[in-house]
Length: 488
Ligand code: NOJ
Image (cartoon, rainbow, N blue to C red; front, side):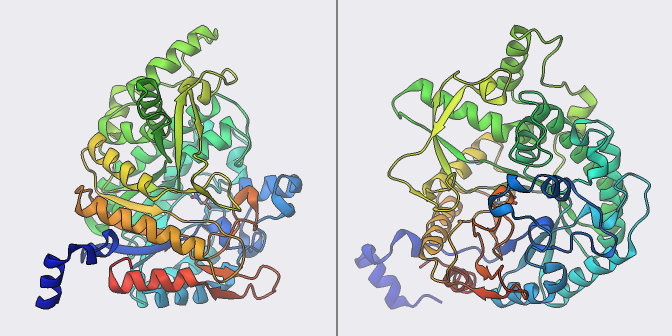
């Protein structure tokens, strides 16, 4: 209860209320932390697990990753999961967002293949322990670790993948859906597809610029829609869970605020990154600006048909509305201006936007793409509210990458800044945000940056056999925010 005296003081001297302590998080708002299987589990060949596209590619090409690191051992969470859960619990979080490794559950990967009982036992142990500790398990079904066996047949570019994914997802519903009530079908389709199939910075490093990303995204969206409809029909009546998908986007701000073409470029970039998935989910089909530009450029380039695949009417309907709530992964902001200075064919050329940073912004020392621009989160949330009819939204990732060390003041500043802006978006702008997830609980395998970019609230000593975990200053700060429900 706020005391009367405090209210009087606030009325007489409003300056005692800073932006950040004016608001508190609503009672039903949930806080969590996130991890992903390949980034923390290790045990890459234990108990029947087979190779994912990350295991395969990094064993074959160790030089692609900083310090020749890989996820073979990572945080050893396959063995240390109990300790991880204690850390989540002591943080005071409401939920733990984690992913399941497809290659553990179905070692052969494909639809109809044998379930691996050891993997079932492993994830059952984790889920049961989370629940008995009062934590909500929120499970990402696919966080980038496709079985290599399925990549051999084209991976996400082959439409056959839809049936394989649907079988795998149904398997996890059958196994764990009696207790898991929050499912995330895919983590960051943009990264799965654009980085993995058009580019070379994510597995499977396919490098089909301007083509692979569109084919992959099409199949990811169809897989998502199909599994949502199946869950709705076959599982929801008895399991009563909720299904989401989480997309990432940077906020794009016009480089020159007074330039219409910069403003247009920023909007176009948002549509090509986030709208690519949000538009089919909320409004149906790809955004008009994507269809128009990709069709036009494909024709100019001499392709027999558009590089952007087409949905049928029934597919559009299947995907439209296929969510109970939506996920947003957001880390950073960039400036946008029009440019066609890119190779063809490419998603960059199709988008026609050059992005850059503002020299005033603080840049992460270990992840050059990551800038501390808290107001970008608020602007993005307002944009989503206006563009997509204020959907129920979870922030499923947000975080800062530091160097090693326990006094991570840079992460503390980032957390305070972003959560303050989130409070304003909720209270002043009416954005329908239901929860916030910090990435990550632990320092972990940060893809091609290996263990050099540290995202953990908890430091992990990768030189110790025990992978010793030590909470950082930011862990205490986040713990305090969760407890007090305000940002100091
Ligand atoms: C996106 C991804 O989901 C996660 O795997 C990654 O580690 C973080 N963002 C930080 O880059």
